Image 1 (tube, rainbow, N blue to C red):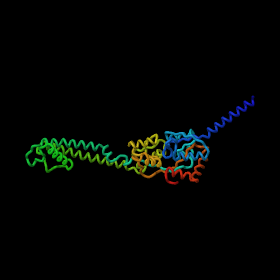
Image 2 (tube, one colour):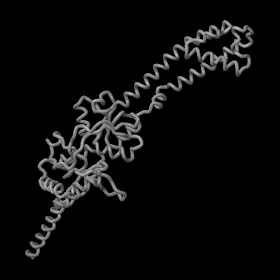
Image 3 (tube, helix red, strand yellow):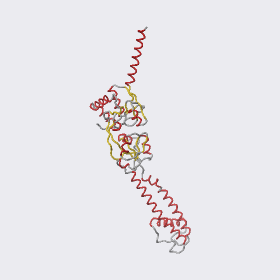
Image 4 (cartoon, rainbow, N blue to C red):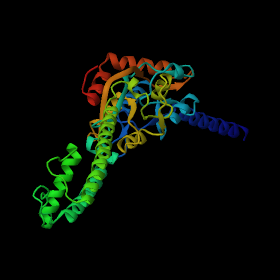
Length: 357
């Protein structure tokens, strides 16, 4: 009886030990969708450069894993640092701030930051002219010009003095003569050859001359302002040009830290998709993110409206993030080095980026 009980307890302990060991060998790997590093295929499964990279590492070091897909980049980082997930894999920049509270693997990708703007500098010249109200201003001026022309014709018709008989008596011809007369005054400042005969028309002429001066000066100012705005919006070439501009980054990213360290206060959004929406809808002048990610989007779904500007700056490396003191750090590093030596890394890089490393 006692022997059976002891054997039963031993069997139960073995089962529990096996289950615990099995659960401990299954790593929790945090990630976030960031094409082409992490994305989904047509079947909904995760794929991408970082996904395939980690899959090969896990195979080589002999561990099972399950993905924990996050919506926020900062949450993915925080949970890995806190040990809530064992590993974080995506496009994670190796920075001194993160290294001080966590461990990184050997670099798995060489990257840098880039700036993306809307094609045409964010807004076309025609768009800026429309936004500035120039077209409505011109429409109002033409309407006033038409009213003045009708008044001039109405009071000037029937004049028989050959010196003042410039405006024809019929409506269409007379109004056209008056329209041309008023237009020349507005654009050239005077029509000395023809002077209205009636006193009321001379008063109208003085009113129109003064109004024309106001109109021309205002129109010139509006056009100058529109062109200046267009130049400002298309003048982003380096991160230093972002000062005074509306620029967006993702929350908790190295891009946010970099810009803030250079006295540039960016707008912070939760996801990368939020950045794209803000730029496309012209809520911001530019966005800053990793070069390969922006390049991938600009050549894909954003090719009709988005482009990269300037050179890649603040070169940085991506790594696999682990909690400080992770027991997997050494084996992961060894796997990465062997993958480079054996050519696996080069082939994987060519698959996604078309250039050997």
